[in-house]
Length: 132
Image (tube, rainbow, N blue to C red; front, side, top):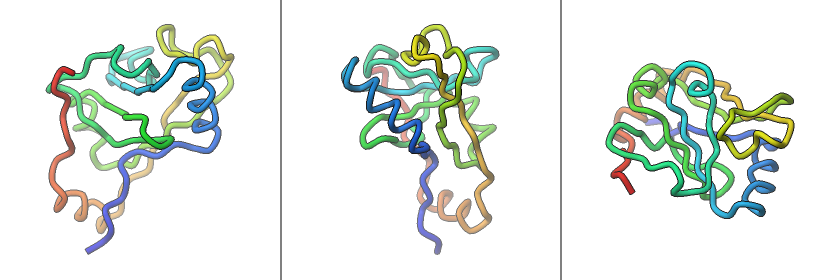
């Protein structure tokens, strides 16, 4: 059986921005709703400012302990992909913490191999939010 691959990663550039934002705002979290416009971008918030619930799936953590959540409906579309948070020049989403930085978080993805998908399936479903 293959090692269980992470569902979420971050590029070194994204991790550097996350570190800067953490130093200014304290612990952070990401959420991606899968909606149109800003909802399709990963949104960065002070941890706890965005309330997660049963319709949110925890993809994992980046930059140490920063949780990354995704809406359950979007997760169903993306469950077969490994998601990587990256940062590019441009204006961030209106409510996301990187907005005034002149950059924005984006996601890149790749499809899991058959072996990786089998390992993830054997590991069971990812955690869901509980409203805390």
